[in-house]
Image 1 (tube, rainbow, N blue to C red):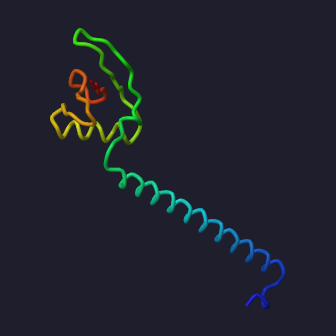
Image 2 (cartoon, helix red, strand yellow; image 1 turned 45 degrees about the horizontal axis):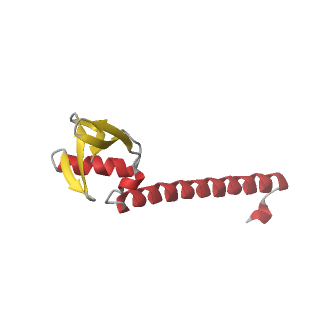
Image 3 (cartoon, rainbow, N blue to C red; image 1 turned 60 degrees about the horizontal axis):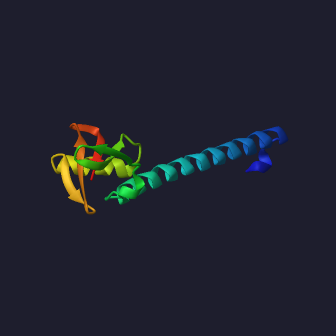
Length: 109
């Protein structure tokens, strides 16, 4: 097929095929990245309190810890589970609740 093409046409054809190949590789990488991120999010069903940043505080009732809005999966899963339990629950040997009914701040004791 390429025997019928002039030298300049062959160069253009090869360049076009290379561009097409590079575009397909980039598309494949983007699709893989998207699918992998979706699978990772779907796989994590439970939260780990060690992956949430807690700050120690004091109150008249004693010490407690507080975590404010965090951009991680564990915090989001904790918020979801707290919502499912009406804003208060016991898990991992601790009590968890929303601070002043704010869903972006969680306390534990």
